[in-house]
Image 1: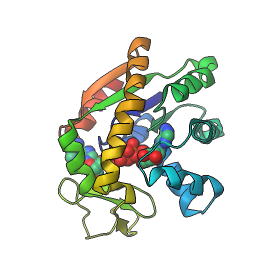
Image 2: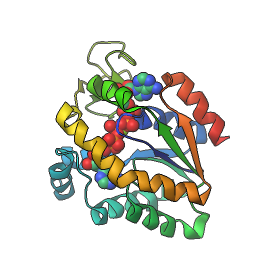
Image 3: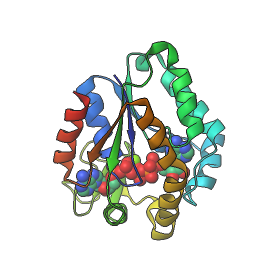
Image 4: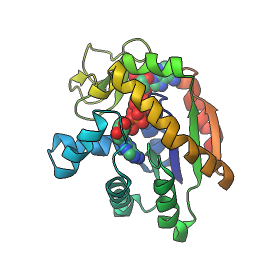
Length: 212
Ligand code: AP5
Ligand code: MG
């Protein structure tokens, strides 16, 4: 299965990606996590990405496409994958379609539909694991031990781009750049919309249903 999770910032893509991947027996990746990993290793790509991410802008297509294509080409991803947060521009969508044209293309694109007010509430209370990058939420998904990741025990932190000013710009950029990509996949017939404003376990059930 080659699955793409799309949706606005804070819609719950990262919360669901690893569970869906486990269920499908494939690996998952988030383009944002790949950039943050590069940043924590202080690579040239990480430094470049940071200058865009801190403002809530998208990282340029050429470097983003190269980074995700390299991930797709790794042998352990040849049987399928779950990608969260890519493609987000028409150029990225076309590059992905071309890349997968010999292997049957994308199987499912799932769009996480959440009203804007909920997104702001989710992002303002989010905490991320400094090691495995899993998301938690102060109210909706609190960790068992305060400020510690349930999965690896490392410390949680608030993402710089979850501050209110940056969140506002991320939402604008999403509407401008990524909404046209939803139409693009709708035309291909692969897009499935889910009501991702529901609770975490209800969204998981809805996802299972559309991926069946
Ligand atoms: P990225 O890290 O991908 O950020 P994003 O797309 O803005 O999405 P988020 O990670 O903020 O939200 P999410 O949908 O994963 O929600 P989550 O599960 O955490 O990208 C960051 C930046 O990198 C971009 O701004 C850009 O600069 C750059 N970038 C990345 N990809 C790029 C690309 N393809 N092209 C160019 N640039 C790119 O959930 C949010 C919170 O809500 C959590 O606290 C969670 O616990 C909680 N929650 C989740 N589900 C529910 C629920 N059902 N009910 C209640 N609470 C919930
Ligand atoms: Mg995420």
